[in-house]
Structures are given as C-alpha cells and as structure tokens.
Length: 413
Image (tube, rainbow, N blue to C red; front, side, top):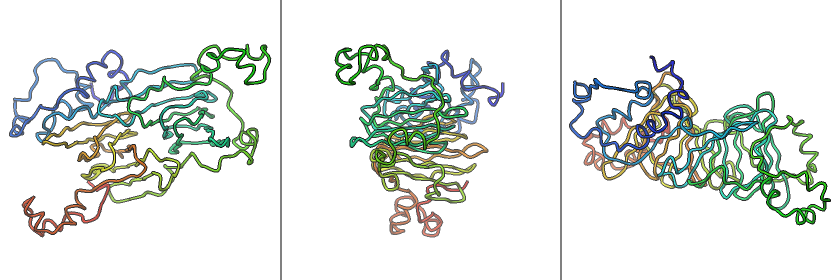
C-alpha cells in the first residue's frame, strides 16, 4: 500500500499508539555508529521479517538513521495524531506535554476545535497562554486586572496571548467555527486542570453565591451543577455589537492581546523561504513566548543554528521535513516530521530543519522567552579570522569565503 493512501489518523490510531511511541519517540538512537555507512546500503540492513511499512514510510530516519546519528538525546518527536482526544458537543481538544516529551519542561501544547457558536468556557490558568489560529474564526475575550475588557475576532494566522491568571474565553464563529494551537509556558501543563467558572459556582455554597451576586435563591438554582468546558451556543452578533454590549470604549482595554502573524511582512526572506518573528518587541504583551513562523521551499534548509536563551518547541503545519539535533558529547538524533507533528530541541542544542518534500514546509518554532534569538553557524565561522577556521575545519581561505557571511535563517536547496 502506498503511504500516500494511508491516513495517519488510521494507522497511528489508538491501537498503535504504543508501537508508534516506542518506534519514534522513545528509542535510543544508537542504531548506526561510526563506520557503518556501507552497511546501510548492502544486505546488512535487510529485514525479511515483519514490518509496519506505513509507519516506517512515515518516519524513515527514526528506524534507519543516517550514519552521522550517534547516542541518545531523548525524545524529540511526538504527534497530535497519537494524542487522546477529549470530544464534547461543540468541539474537541488534545494535548502534547512533558508527559509525551519528557525533555520539554518549559512548554506544552494543546490543539483545540470549536464548532460555530461553541465556547471554550470562561476560565483561567496557572500558565501563560499563547495561541495560533489554524482554521476558521473565533471571538476571544480577556479581562485585565484594572477591570477593562478586550474583545476581538481572530482568523487563520492570527495570535493571541493571555497572561497567567487573566480570565478569558474563546468562541467559534461562522460558518464553521475554528481550530487553534495553544502553547503554555509550563511543560507539565494539563488542559483539564484549569479554573472553570462553572466548577467554581458549582462548588460554592448557594447562600454565599446569593450574597455575592445579589440574586435570589431561584436564580442561584439555575447555575451549572458541573463543568461546561466546551459547549454549544448560538453564533454571536458582530464584534461592534459585542463591544458595545460589554460597555463600549469606557471599559475597553488599552492593551492589545491579539496579533496578525500570518499577515505581517516576513522578518527575513530568501530564495529558500521566509521567516516571520513575533516576540515582545512587536507584540509587547507576549513577554514569555517568542515565536517564528517558518516557510521552507522544497529542498530548503533552516540553516545550522542554535538558540541561546530557551529550548525550542515546534509545531508542523504542512509539508514534510527532517531535523537532526546535536548534543554533547557527540550525540545526534535525526527524525522526520509531517503535518500535526511536534518537534523539540533542548536549549542551546545545534540543529537544522530541511524540507524533504515537494511542497512548502511550514512550521512554528516557539520558545519560553521574551525575545527570539539564534546563532548561525555560518555567521560565526565568517566572523572569525580565516586561519582559525582553517585550523579547526581544514578549509582553505577560498572555501571559507564561499560560506555565507550573514545569518540566512533559510537557505535555498
């Protein structure tokens, strides 16, 4: 069966979660050591026995890594297609956290869907929430500590940021609701462990609620007796109507909690693709999550680099890619990535991402940091006196001059 005809949700379903997790995320990458490159291409690598061919085709570098891979650096891959979905009337949610990627202590991710009119109910978190809209449109609300309210509509490519403890909501708009990625600055974050309005009132004595709300017992009796979490409702009116109903300009927050990332001009554009960077410099409220939206043309390379200030949590939106992560002493792990996959790079670890498909590779790279920062290997080598590079890499000055001198971010294939 050709891999193109196999749905990832079918062959990476509940029945094969354990197999896929062991094959991709949990194995030590000792497979090929120095001097085994020849074995990769002769009868040594043959397997006359059983194989899960669709699984192998999905991630060939995990089962048969390049000879340059060595040692064990831990899991750098997981997929939302392996994550258990919580489905309720009005939408669904699933998550990839430190439980699936043990090295990811700083960031966790949640993928959520809301149908038109449906709510992710009023709630707040212990962690900051950064979000990227994947599909459709939504209305978000967030209250500031000064009592002002921010209400906005977001669409594909837009961001929002809610600081920890700030109460907020998300509602799907017409015609088909929305889907989005939520990123939290706590690796062990659990989407089920949030402060819900419905649960608070359900677990507060009725006489206290009567005093607090200044309502009679007959009204208190109407309040929810259990959590709502995700639930259906009517599609709301216009944004202008919502803002007016909330109190208008007199109660509107002066702080913007949304940003149009997909529509912004590229921060860097080359023949190999483009990068859009959003951090606290251009989205001031986002003080704990910095991000880059990367598009690589076929054959393009997110150049060899590392990040000095945080580990990297990736989400792949489309295309096919491959990444090798380098760690001391002499450890390296290569994995393949597809849409809906999550990648992880430990802080300051060297890595690259290559487009191995025939369409654009698009992915997000996110950091628990207020500033996006990276070091380019090319830029470093070209800023040194040539004799230093020659001494380390055996390259003559003519070869060194061919290395790009400025940071490229993305390089054409």
